[in-house]
Amino acid sequence: MHHQLQQRLDGLNAIRVRAHIATAEFYAMIGKEQPAQPVRFQVVAKGKHAFHIVDRTTDKVRGFRFDFARAVEYAQALEDRAAGVTVQLSSEARQ
Image 1 (tube, rainbow, N blue to C red):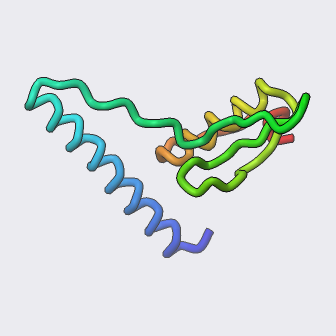
Image 2 (spheres, rainbow, N blue to C red):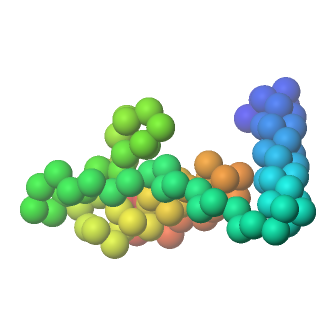
């Protein structure tokens, strides 16, 4: 990845982390629990053994799997990536 792009991604991830921390501190100050974050990537059945992983913010298909467990694993990996967590998928999940 280009050096400037990596710097920009690092900066955006740092801002995202700070925003989450500030939000948590705010809710702690007022004594309420944070609202649950909605699921961004949803597994949708498209046949007997076919599943699409759909990005709910754009309604675009981000991938597909022919096994439900692998589809869920891939959707969770996409959620983690969107949250800024480094994820390593198993070789089976990448297929």
